Length: 135
Image 1 (cartoon, rainbow, N blue to C red):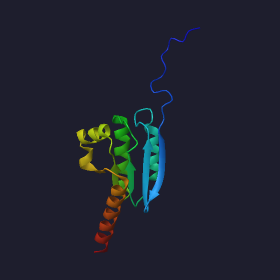
Image 2: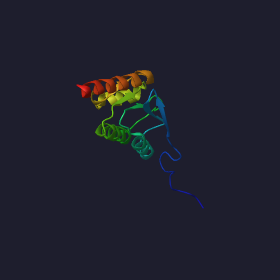
Image 3: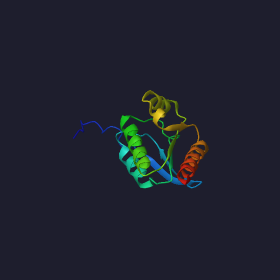
Image 4: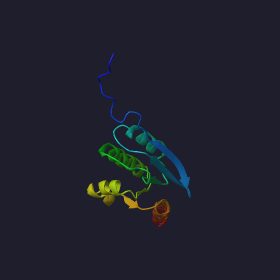
């Protein structure tokens, strides 16, 4: 018997999500494509790692992101901000940077080229918020 049905798109494609911490800041690093087939895992990881202190989302290992991935990224950032956290996004991939710039995402969220810059930015925002709350 012949199988005349095509394989499902992106069959076997997955994304690995690394959740770590750097200098007291949560770091979420997806490794792989963020698209309609992998976005559920990414969304769940962002929700699980959301914290009041802040988060760096490191897209340096994401070679491709579609509108579903962008939507999950924006939703995760909103949840983090809703609970009082700050966010920075690390990205040095030209294709993903182009998407973030074209959609004006980079005007809503700080996009930096490296993890250290992202952690430093979130920590400085935290210190500013703490100073403002003391006044």
